[in-house]
Image 1: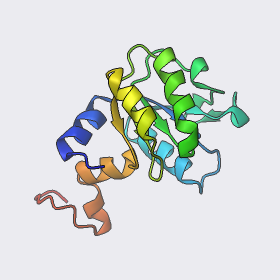
Image 2 (image 1 turned 120 degrees about the horizontal axis):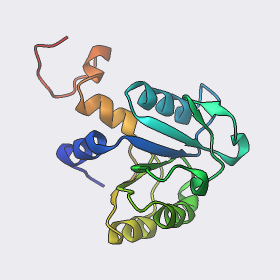
Image 3 (image 1 turned 30 degrees about the horizontal axis):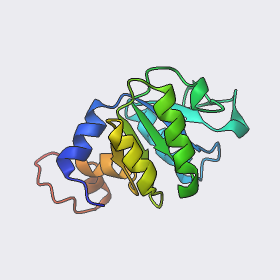
Image 4 (image 1 turned 90 degrees about the horizontal axis):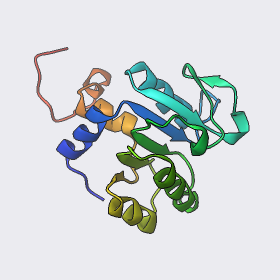
Length: 155
């Protein structure tokens, strides 16, 4: 799947509140690292993990499921196996009336669930990481020595 930089940047610019499904409390897990990074960048991250419901992570209460999340979620970020995606998408479409984006992390894809979300008016990203895309599109990777293809006089 290919997504234009403009499309990804539009999604990341308009998103304010993210329900992160499958987030881990373990600081060495990718989901923890991504959630922490996004929260430090000003996104409100609502952690969703039934095994840790009621605990606090990134300054927010961990929710058991999407049904227990606040109403004003902009994006559902899925850190679960691909076979879990249809159930998550169904729950998200039923729960959130203002939802704009379903985002599936690296290695997570489900064509039928993506088509269903798109038919409901959602933007859908598969097999990508919002942290990586944010860093790339907002020129943060160059500080780590990566060539982002963007030329700037800023350090």
